[in-house]
Length: 117
Image (cartoon, rainbow, N blue to C red; front, side, top):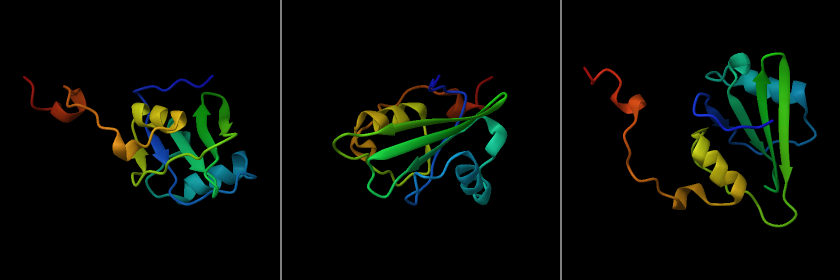
C-alpha cells in the first residue's frame, strides 16, 4: 500500500524513463545516481517521455514495490527539482503543477535543528 510519509525522501528522475523497465531496470537507474541509496526506503519517481505514466519504486522491508499510474487524459507536470516532499508528490499525482503551487512558511524542525535550546 502506498502511503506518503514525512519520514522518507522522494527523488524524481529528471530524464524520461522507459516504462517497460521493471524492478531491475529501475534499480539500475537508482544505483547510477550518486546520491540515491536503493535500500533506504526512499521513493524513486520515474515519468515516461509522453508524461502520461508514472512509476514509484520503493524498498519495503522484504523487497521492492512498484506503484504505477497511467493517465487516460492529460500529462504529469515536470519539476526542476530532483528531491520532492510528500506534499509535492501528492500534487504531482493529482495533476497540480508544482512550480505554480506555493506553500506558506511554517515551523519545521528540519530548518531549525540545532538552534533550539
